[in-house]
Length: 462
Image 1 (cartoon, rainbow, N blue to C red):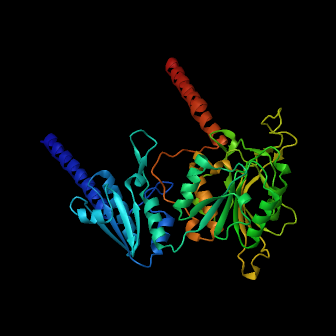
Image 2: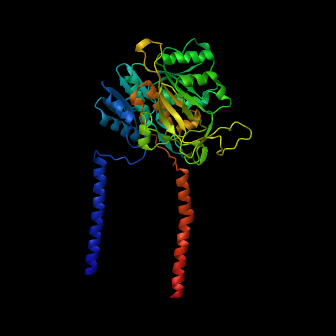
Image 3: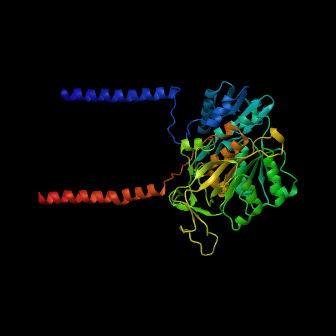
């Protein structure tokens, strides 16, 4: 009898547990509350998206031509999340087979095409923009938020800012600049190349001039044109890596001096904060600024391959703010270009911590009178971070785009952008890596060995 009662009690207890679990799942699926515990907020709308949706003043109609597969449901979930942030988004989910006339009107030929409409303006997001190959074979990354938000920004902006990429001195270009160009365009900018040899001045429509990775000096005339651009309230982003003979670059160094900065030309070595243990690829610490604040909050590091340190010019009246700084263990290798160079700290090397990036608010020039805007500049001691795959490393993309947004004075662009679902690399400082190694490979086996020896000894004596 007692045994039968125990069986019944156990059955009731198990059924109750299953019922409670099912109820929790049902409530969690229907409840409006969501918690995103991922470090980069991959399951939440980004601050940039929320700001964009908050700024909508007119209704934007959205036609999502989706199917019932996982990809279609992913598009639907994201658009539903957008609707929760604003009542200015009128979303309609359309089956192109059932409504072929609407699909024909917007020239839709593929499922998961999304069309954004505001007045007479249209923006179409194609499925191949939304779903890209993932890091693991057979997987895909969903980039819906990035493209949806940009489509809305394109519809609501009256004109696109123009960013010029300076060419003619070995700067980042071609395939190496493809990611940079794509990301800048993704922020709603027009991106054009500029060779000043063919010009008499920096074009008047230039919002920002980017000088990323020159391997030779500017000409005197080019430097004059860039200085006139700054005098008129221009904005410049300069990225430099150590190059042989850069200390003799009279015109580039003169431009930097006008901004209150000197490029040391050393090769930064940081054995403490290094990318996967490579001391020639520092992972600098942030210094508080609008450009870096959200990166600091999210603990998203920047990676600066082949960097050179920057110093303030003594007596300069420009307002300089540090952005990136190495650890105290870092040093600037000054003899890296010689044939006998060895990457180890010597007496002539520059001690850390070293500054790797500055934000500059420069003095007004005489170009456009009192109405001219304040010239701004961001100078970074690594051009490699702007090139190819390096731009996609952790916080590099956000740092570069935040710098451009700060130069433009657009607060909505100084933020963390939509995060693509992907495999994320872990960064472990050298000191912590050593502690993990000693703890797991050395200490734990020793503890077990000692414990085993004590047990064996006690049993032997017993």
